[in-house]
Image 1: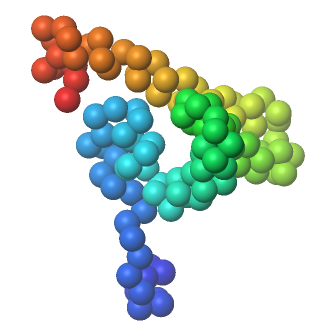
Image 2: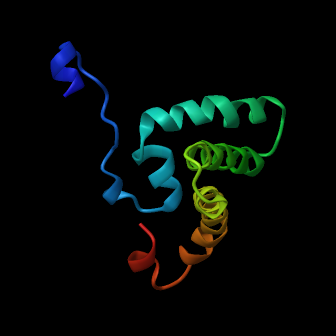
Length: 118
C-alpha cells in the first residue's frame, strides 16, 4: 500500500520464510529483513567491534530484540509476565541457534542426513 501511495519500490519485508532450512537461516536471511538489519547494527556489529565472540554477539542481538518486543507490553501497562514471555521467546531463539550450530555437523554425518539436513 505504501509503495503504491508514494510510488516507491520497497525491498521485500520477508524472503520466503517458509523455505528456511534452519532456525539461523530463518532469522538471518528470511524474516523481517529491515528490522533485522537495524538490530544487527545496534547490537551485533558493536559487539563484534569490541572483539566479542560471535555467539556472544548473537545473544546480545536477540536480547535486544527481546527488549524491543517486551517494551510495548510494559508501556501498555500489561502484566510483567507478558513482557517476560516476549523477552524469553527471543532469548530462546538464540539458544536454539546455538544448539542447532552444534547439532548440524553431527546430523550431517548420519545416514538420515538427506532427510534431516538440507
